[in-house]
Amino acid sequence: MTGTIEALAFATALFLVIHILPSSFLRQEIIQKIGLNGYLGGYSLLSALSLIWMIWAYFEAPYGPVYWEVGNWARYVAIAVMLLASILFVGPYTGASATAIGGQKKINDQKTRGGLNAITRHPLMWSLTLWAGVHLLNNGDLKSLIFFGGMGGLALAGTFLIDAKRAREVGADWKDFIAHTSNVPFLAVIRGRASLSVKALWWKVLLGVFVFFAFFHLHTMVIGVSPFPM
Image 1 (spheres, one colour):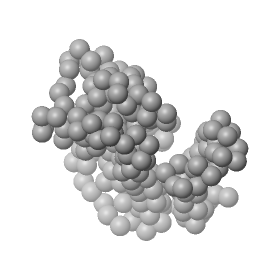
Image 2 (cartoon, rainbow, N blue to C red):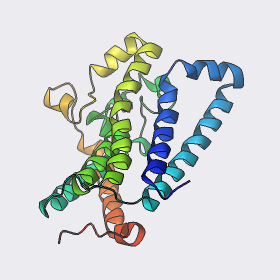
Image 3 (spheres, rainbow, N blue to C red):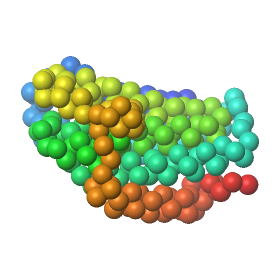
């Protein structure tokens, strides 16, 4: 079911519900009935299918009303923000994380407080939030509002939902962890609760820059829209 704004809205709503589930009381009830492996497998499958449908519905939907239009300056903003977003994006894949799935077991690992985690304890969530934010800035049509608003809103809300979930699971160790990290990027560094290490960051930053240029130059080919300022 694609080709309409309604289909996109429904696909987006389904995607949101599926991803809010792990932070709800239903998670434990489902695990008790089908086991952890069954839950993780089913959740991963439903997440992938709903994301594919959501993306497909976005490309097939009409633009709908346009609520805002911005100048060429917004593309320069997008380039700068997407560079940071690309660097944060590699965070969960290049080091230990206390906020990833199963991360509560690593809560006392000092590596979960360094590297990109020193910038934010939710690097992937903030990467998606920034990505969605700059795409919303540059696309004021209804279908973009639904798609990017849904993705970005979920990612931002996810930082708080994950924090609340970890607080229930870990207790005192979580309080110590958040005392040395921050949700908002760079806040812990600014307040002196965390520090940036060149040794821990340099290769991750370079990898993030590579990812940025790969996405930037493939954007026109894959998405059909040039990200270059006009």
